[in-house]
Image (tube, rainbow, N blue to C red; front, side):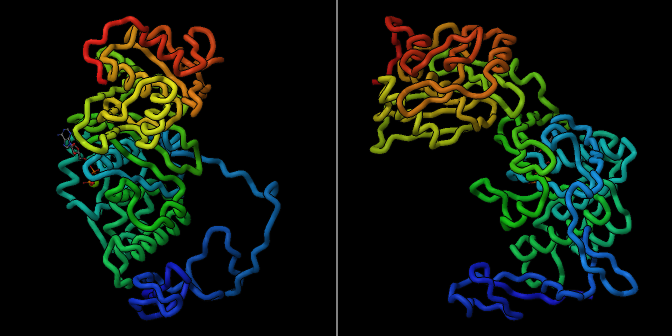
Length: 464
Ligand SMILES: Nc1ncnc2c1ncn2[C@@H]1O[C@H](COP(=O)(O)OP(=O)(O)OP(=O)(O)O)[C@@H](O)[C@H]1O
Ligand SMILES: [Mg+2]
């Protein structure tokens, strides 16, 4: 039987069976969101895992027990066969868990999930791919690119939530992909699929079934123009794991990161390349990026950490006289505020003023670096571009965080960064004090600049 709907104010919590443009509770406009009416205590519904047992029609009162008395659950994971995805998930999909996979349009979300289900199907697992966005024929076209496993996956092209839940309950797959959570809709809710109330209801109902039947579910989600996950924030709280698939569409590299993970670390990241045959894991990323590094003025190699894995990436900078009153600061693969901070420190403590120049900084290959250890590479790349001189001993690798007083601060895993740099022919890595043997330690930005850009060298293209 369809459940009644209720409209609740997202500000003050006021509830009403009717929708109001202005909340009668707090007077705010457009704050009422439609949702299914919560069940009253004692009202029959699906029992949640851990809820009291039903004996002779009566539900026993639930009893709290010390954790030591709870039998430890054996966490059996389903390997997706995509190594980088498994690593980011913490070892594979956990039965009964919900994973939200977000990413910009066309980045490869459907390709990745098709591939994962294909591998699982080949390994003899029961799988289901629910497509609300594409027709079954469109999904088949993609699967042809991805190989025989992908073609073995059963597909359901459907947008009605009840119908999807019916098939999920009947088929009881071990792994299921819903592509996407924004396209499914509950008929009893008036809002269009993708609206806050609908997304909340869809995710909640699927989660309930997933927990009951131990189905590992991947919900594909859209992202907003700003790059955040679309839909209500509650969705991110509800799911066990939030993965973000990012990269530049024009470039082949794609990066998968965990923003939240109840079953593993959020430090891990996986690198892929989009090819004709689907997404291919990039295992020798450092070698590629170092080989491609230009060694020209404005290029520095950053020995970064992507979770527990060291990765060498090229940071490129261009500094050009600006015609604008407010010079441009364009950044790709880094935090914009971090660049502003590095430019200020460079000016104050490195005597490299860029106030009148446009500054462009790019982490090559569409990779995103989200760690403070990138400061020194940005500073050296900008200084090198500004002075029109390549860094000495290129490819010159470095890492370290810049303090506001111009000091170079220690960052995590220096020995692994140094090993990776040495493995790929980058010797004399400029690093903060206490980084260990093999590092060219520089306590301050000024000393790092003196090592990388020795005074007296020519300045063919210096920017004033
Ligand atoms: N034959 C091909 N060879 C290489 N890459 C391809 C090929 N066909 C498609 N692609 C790539 O796959 C991308 C589409 O992948 P996919 O459909 O998995 O993305 P998506 O994130 O699911 O997109 P959407 O948000 O539209 O659902 C395209 O942008 C294109 O880069
Ligand atoms: Mg898609």
